Image (tube, rainbow, N blue to C red; front, side, top):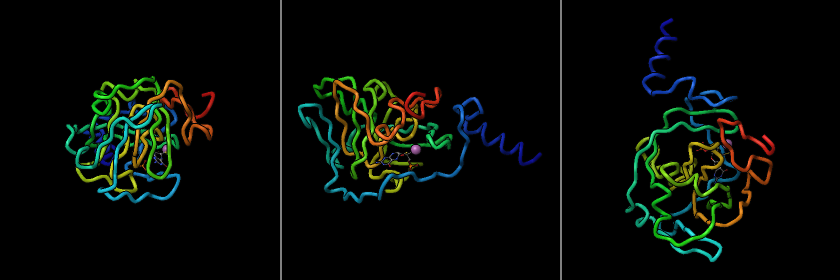
Length: 201
Ligand SMILES: Nc1nc2c(c(=O)[nH]1)N[C@H]1C(S)=C(S)[C@@H](COP(=O)(O)O)O[C@H]1N2
Ligand SMILES: [Mo]
C-alpha cells in the first residue's frame, strides 16, 4: 500500500499519468543509451552546427555562437521505439525555429545529420512552433557524450530515434529522404501515439 501510494504521489508530482503513455510503451526511470555506433568525440573548438539546403550550407555556428543564442528549459516525456518511455525529462536547448528564422531556404522536409554519420528525416513543420530544440543540457548539467553531447536534437512528440544525438546539421529539401533507421524499416514519420514504429504502421 505504502509503495503504491508513494509511487502514485511521485507520478502526480511529475504531472505524468497513464494517459501520457503512448500505446505499447512502458515507463522507465532509468535513462537507457541507444546508439547505433561509437560515441563521436567532438572537441568544442571544432564543433559546428550547420544549416543549409540543396545549395549547401548557408549558416553555421561555432559552439560559443550557438551558446550565445536564447535557450529555454523544457520538461517533456520521451518515447523510444524499443518501447521505453521516460516521463518528465528536463532539457535546456535552443528552439530549432530560432536557427531557421534568418535563413532563406526552400523545402518542407529536413534531414538532420550527426557527427558519426547518423541521419534522420522529419517534416520541417515538426521542428517549428516550439516542438523541437537543439539541447545541450540534461537536468541542468551539460549533456553527457553518450546521450548526444555536446548537443542533440530533441523532438519529443516523435519516437526518440528522430532526436539525433551529436547533431551537426539540418538540411532543408523539397523531398523527404529516409535517414539511417528509416532506410532500415522504421517509419518515415514515427508518431508514438499512432504507433508508427515500422513501414506500413
Ligand atoms: N547520432 C545518433 N542519434 C541517435 C541515435 C544514434 O544511434 N545515433 N539513436 C537514436 C535512438 S534509436 C534513440 S532511442 C535515442 C536514444 O537517446 P539516448 O541514448 O540519449 O537515450 O537517440 C536517437 N538518436
Ligand atoms: Mo530508439
